[in-house]
Length: 117
Image 1 (spheres, rainbow, N blue to C red):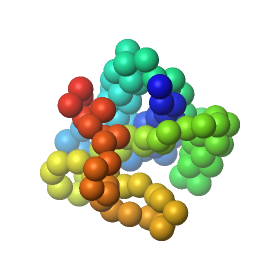
Image 2: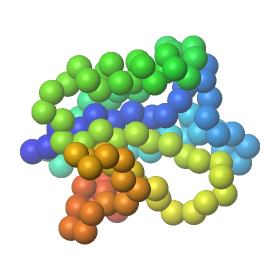
Image 3: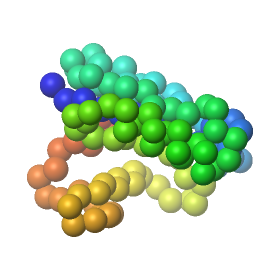
């Protein structure tokens, strides 16, 4: 089975998008569902959400520290809901070739999660 780090983006002290919905409130719901379904499938999942950081830099540093505390992670999942007016799902990943904006052909990690949400 795989091991995942999952976290909701931002926090109440450093909020993300707001208006139509509150990103912090709603991304926590998505995060909880992702964790629930991954654990139900037998995976190890760590919740690396930060609710303590009072600046954007500290929030991110706390998340990174929590994620880096776990070894053998298959995938780090960061849940964000953007206010930019787009539709659909954004999937970004890093590899030995650097930051990428799409998954390579044959990559199946998002298919484990997206149909369940």
